[in-house]
Image (cartoon, rainbow, N blue to C red; front, top):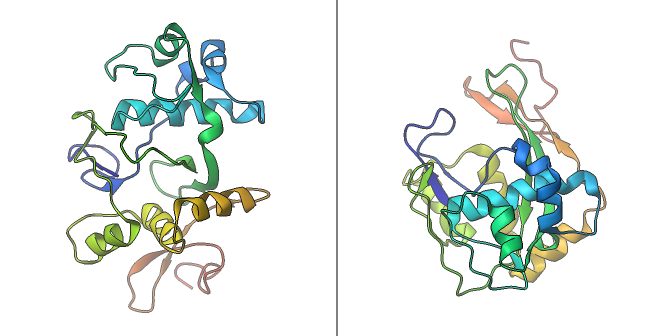
Length: 214
């Protein structure tokens, strides 16, 4: 996990997973050529962006063959990977969820979350601009950090940490991801809780269909 810069316009100072936006470069032929992926071609831009952001923000590069060293300050990850004689291994990403920002908020996102197994000895290096404090952390520990106020953990991040905490191994997490036959979109809603304060509700919650102000 990484801590977003305090001055970020969105989720400043929050602890989250590495990630970011799909750029035009992630949709180009150079990205598709640099990726090792034999699945749905419609997923390529999102997988390319996930691999690129993981490299840029956390210094982790998933390559085929494994272990290729690509400098984090490279201007073009796709070209650098090709020059190193390898591919970015999109097949190591397992798609687990798709979250869409609640309606009515000024900034909205359509976000895909992936899980991947990474070598125990792989180091990380936060970019020091967009994110800081890169850390390997057990999901239960991260949840505890959020509960005691040590970390600010956004609702979607917390939901995924709780999902991870339900499994006792990395293999179990990947098996869970692979068992999802079709990833459903999660559209949270802002509702009023029992204490009168606004809260986030997701499909399946008892108050999801209750209109705010009703």
